[in-house]
Length: 145
Image (tube, rainbow, N blue to C red):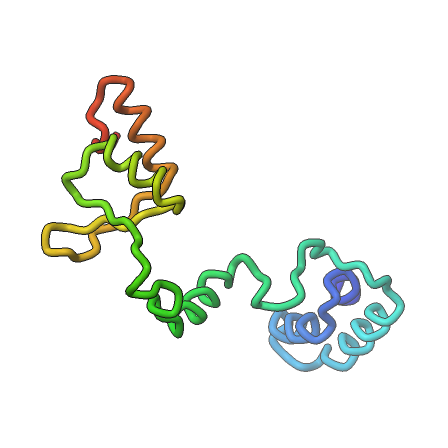
């Protein structure tokens, strides 16, 4: 069984460790090493893990941590200069005002500021589309369902 898993998963060393842990001793260590080594060498290059990625940086499971690390060192000022005029939305803007500003801006999302000028959130095209659908159906445009 150790040989099969070492060949199928392409993990001879971890298979030896698993055998040692499962048996509770080292009496099968040498035979397990030989079996895993031989089955690993004579097996094909294919693995049972078809979607195995090349490294952790390509893994969807670890993608969030890498993105956070990269974004932690980037400042908004590198991309948004003070002289550039990005239109902003306000909390009391109507749906029509929001749609007009987004159309004129050409950005897929715009920041929303509160009365003190602090960032309250971001509105993107999908949220505007959903709000316009709610507005057409007679419900309030910014109400959550």
